[in-house]
Amino acid sequence: MEKKAELCRGKAKSVYFTDDDDYLIIEFRNDTSAFDGEKIEQLDRKGMVNNKFTAFIMDKLEDAGVKTHHVKLLSDEEALVRKLDMLPIECVVRNIAAGSLCKRLGVEEGVDLNPPTFEFFLKNDALHDPMINEYHIRSFGWATDEDIKEMKKLTFQVNDVLKKMFADAGMLLVDYKLEFGRFKGELLLGDEFSPDGCRLWDVETREKLDKDRFRQGLGGVVEAYEEVGKRLGISFD
Ligand code: ADP
Ligand code: UDP
Image 1 (cartoon, rainbow, N blue to C red):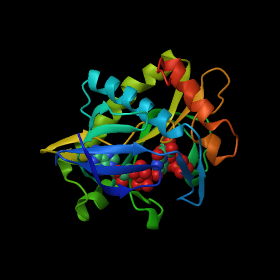
Image 2: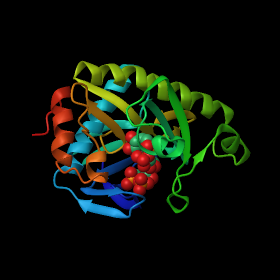
Image 3: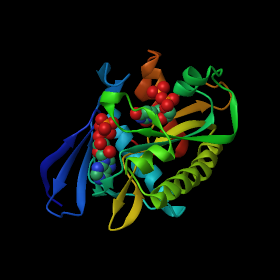
């Protein structure tokens, strides 16, 4: 599949058209950003690690019956994906309190959330991705009732699969963000699943193994991502 013009350049990935209208090439860059792009750094190997990490997770989710945009890896930093009509919505499930939930509700980091919580955010950097609810989504036509139901179902299904997978590898899946889009009338999981968009803690020590290392200046960011990958059996060679 031939790489054509750039469709969009996000904060961490670049997306390219191909010679087939149904497919895109996603390039994972080393750029790492936090706080709405206020903090940006280049982290060596991160593009390659997140590309291979995402491909591995998408394959696991497909095996469990969750349809995704992923087709195949093309190179260390590139993957071939189905071209989705993305919904401007981020779906977040939380198993343990952390990040914006703690700030918003004054909850201590590390509190177990039982049952897990679900939140929608509007994907809009200029507005700092505000939290929204189903009524906003319907009133503004960002998605249909059916999409809302499906996004919630799929996001929780992902939790069932991945919580267990990470637990078996000695990690707690604290929270994560998913994005969905339409492909030929069907809602598919798009974007990525990597330690850039989820929180993972070591089950024994509760050491952070995700992008909070970058947000909080803890260092060893990509090393932690690779450690997570190694525990799952992903090869980054
Ligand atoms: P951002 O700066 O928006 O957080 P990224 O750097 O992650 O974004 O860039 C990836 C962009 O590509 C995002 O806007 C995402 O919604 C979009 N995208 C991800 N997967 C697909 C897909 N399969 N089809 C179309 N667009 C996609
Ligand atoms: N997240 C993301 N992109 C965003 C916002 C959040 O990938 O634009 C992920 C984040 O890494 C975490 C989860 O979604 O795993 C919940 O994030 P939170 O609302 O706590 O926001 P944060 O404080 O991390 O910005």
